[in-house]
Length: 399
Ligand SMILES: [Zn+2]
Ligand SMILES: [Zn+2]
Image 1: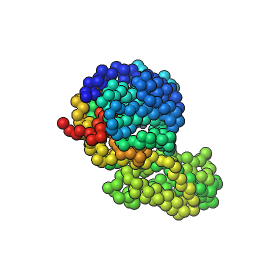
Image 2: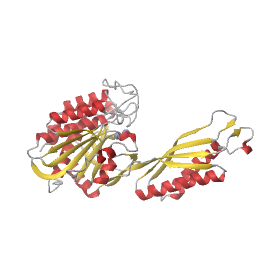
Image 3: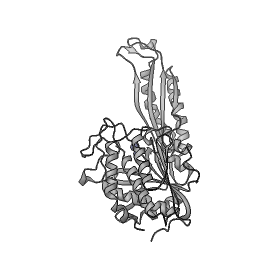
């Protein structure tokens, strides 16, 4: 099966689809037109479609003619609240919204893979489930969780799940893969520091929450420097500080909003505990008190099943014109993690950096630009993984 050759033939169509999506990005939970496009396209291919899955998600089911296993392929569909500043002529037509993370390419590549697989239905072993999910960028419940609650991983039960992400920091045509943890658990926290306000000229009559906040911010870095095993990645950042109205008024309250990132559940649990203890302890020292809250339902660590991922590498290595690199984990979060909690599988990256074409800006940048030459690689890789892992014997490995 020459999936790359076939992907090349549908390359113009994939680029057209991607650009259409790029011009009409939709924010998390609002992917109405995007999911309509997806569902209509899948139906036109003869794939069984369920709309409105987990909100604006779409499930496509393709049953192969041969017996085999159930493989799920996932693409996320949401854009970001970014005003596009790239120089392409298919810029976003929606003010303040942009596909700045490349989810438009994910949709286009997975639709491409769906076409390739339907063309080989007669030889296709097992069943392929296409998961087009909303709201990956949202955090919290995101889009994977509602889709799982709607049963996409059951009936028939998914044996393997795969998803890829376009990556602007990686050179065009390079796959980035890792066994084990590949993306972090992004836990959001809020520290509310309760002091006692008063006049700026008489701080001794007050408990100054801004002064205390400054100490808390510094002390929180001590969690990373002195309380967590240094060989276990852990980052803590305070991204927002809010307090006060005027220079001579000491306010009652200050709030800190921050994020912590970890790559294993043990460190995650410990870090959250220490953050709370340190914040409360520092506040107590200065006579203030603290309310510490962590966002409910934060994404878990994205953990690639090592055995499956080893086989994925051997499949990806067979795609001409690409190369495969073992990569470090990133400390961004991904709700593909939730699918991986239900079935073994792999989340991998596809590089789209190409300085010659000006594709040099990182994901989430207002100038983010993708080298569209890589769409064929992504589509071929997804189709190959579905085909190889659908076979009862599994991937045939390196040839
Ligand atoms: Zn993103
Ligand atoms: Zn993304």
